[in-house]
Image (cartoon, rainbow, N blue to C red; front, side):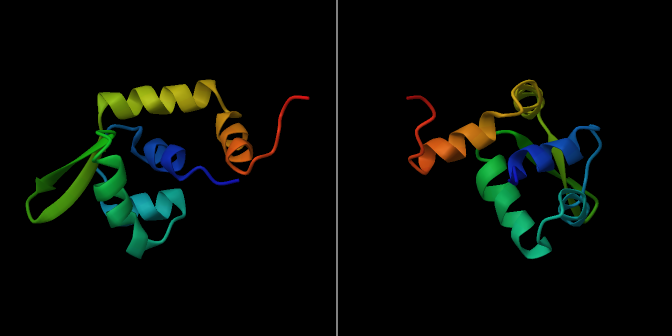
Length: 93
């Protein structure tokens, strides 16, 4: 099962500014869909921030984004558990 937020934050974890194209390539996600995802989801949650470098728009991970990525790495089974819970599958008897 795919965890896009974790994949995108992992690409940005090196702390260097990345273009949307390099993030899409690193996270194996659609180039057409990565910019809206970064802008409307991750930037709104303050996990990433955008900055202009000359005429280029680049993205960088924030401290909150680093903390979220650290949490994802500490809890690798969380996403699968959450998806099962949304589908109504009971985990306990």
